[in-house]
Length: 300
Ligand SMILES: [Zn+2]
Image (cartoon, rainbow, N blue to C red; front, side, top):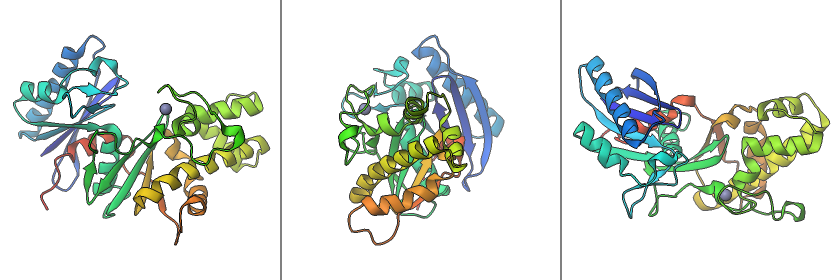
């Protein structure tokens, strides 16, 4: 049995997958807001309860909003600051008496979709999470590629490629730079662009719907959005040339993305010989737990 935990800022989710990838147990608990030790205890309790229910033990992987530093062994880059500076894999492993694998949630998303999701069977997969932020993860041959400094796939903080005069220096990003892809292409960024143009507050999804119905302002905003997103993706295609790009996160529900992005990406990429496949995720909100479980892959 494979157990996966998706550790979020408000919820902890656990799932157990059997060898075929079928989800056999799934539970949720609130993430303790009291401290790191309580978070470790909450995860331990979920594992113990799940294994009692299953009548079996399993391997354990955890998806976190950050990574474990290869240098220090401590969590870094997590937006859940309670985790930063702790050896989460070691502490949870000690509490459960087993080796625990921990990976960034975007990497887990890519791994989940590459293993048995929308990119199943593809060799090179780039997973994009586009929602409140813009993240990504790389899978090659069914294996998650974390990178030497564990930042592989973090394209959201590259500068927007091919920035035009009116796109320089670009919006401020929380990382301290300006004009990051995330500052242009996240859901909140799209909403800000629409608000500035129309004076109206609409959700990203509603802006896209409004454009599909032919609203002029929404069309202008979405057109610029697709163009920027495609420039950003083309820079990934030039390095990785993935077989499939899978999109997850809130913006993945904009159906027009899958029609609008491929021809634009083809236009911006180097010597294109056909379009890159860009598809919607299959596992939705389950990709965190599923990818965490698949950190222990099937034996080849
Ligand atoms: Zn940034």
